Length: 399
Image (tube, rainbow, N blue to C red):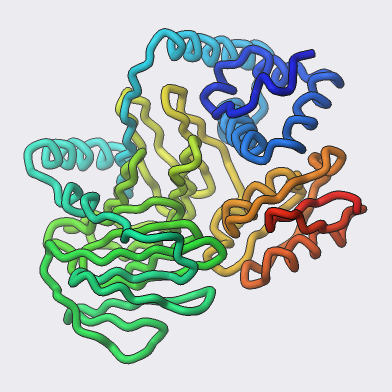
C-alpha cells in the first residue's frame, strides 16, 4: 500500500500519469478503494483533482454512453498509457483551442469552418483587446461588479442580478433606469461574479448569457458588424440569437467556441484542468490544435484535458445547466461530486467523512439558500451531521 503523503499536491495530469491511480480505476480492489477514500476524506483539493480525472476517464471510456467491450477497453488504456509516456518525455505545453460552429450539415460545417479559419489567420482579432482588460486591483469583493469602460466600477447588491443592453447604447440593471454608455466597438465592459452569486446578461442582439459564481466575463458594449466576441473565465450558459452574418465566439484561455445560433454550456475554470462543453440544442463542430475533431449532437458533453484525447458521452443536460435557473439537480450522484460542485460555487471548504463519499443523492438544491442550509438538506437524507469547522468551512460526518 502506498504512503498517503505521496499524492499531496497532485494535479489531474499527474494522476493520469500515475500507474497506481490508473490501475485502481481499471481494476479496483478493496485495498485501493479504501486508500483513495482515505485520501479524499482528508485532502479537499486532491478530492477535486481526483473527481476531474475520473470524469475524464469516464468520458473517454463511455463514448456515446455505451460500455466498451473488453478488448476495446484494453486498447483505450493502452492509448492513455501511451499518451502519458509521451507527456512524461516533454515539458512543453501546447495551447489547445476549440472552434465550434452551428450548421445544418457536415459538409456545410467543413466549408464554413475553412472560410472562418482563413479569416482568423489573415485578419487581426479583437480578442487581443478583450483579453487585455484586467481584473480590478484590490482584495476579494463579495458583490457582483460591473466595470464600465470609463473605469467606473458599479457594485450590484444581492445574490442575483440581470443586465440588459439595448441597440441604442444603453443598459439597465435589474430593470432599473437605463444608463447611456460609450458605445464604440473598441469599448468593453467587464462583469465579475463572486462565490455564491449568479448573474445574467441580455445583449443587444437578444442573446442571453447566464453567468455562474466565480466567473469573469469581458465583452464589447457594441458587437462588430461581422462577429460577436466575448471572453470568459469560469462557467456560462448561452442561448445565442441566430445571425449567420455574425457568428458568436466565446473565447477562453483553453478553448474557443463558435456558433451561429444554439444553446450550450462552457465550463473552463482556471482552477480546473478539465474543460467541458455541453450541447443543449443545435449542432457544433469541435477541432483541437492537434487536429482531433468531433461533431456534437444535442445531449452530448465533450471533455478535454490537455495532451489527452477528447472524450464525448451522452448526458442529462439538465444536470449541467440547471444552475442557470437557480438550482443544482442531481440523479443518484455520489456525495463526493456534489460537494465538489458546492465548494466551487460557494467558495467554502467542505470536508467529507470517508464512509459518506460513495453515498448517492438525488434531488434539487436551491442555490439561493445559504451553504449551511444546503448541506443540512443533504445531511437529512443520510446518517450525517453538518459540522462547522474552525476555519469557517464545513464537514459532513458524525458529530
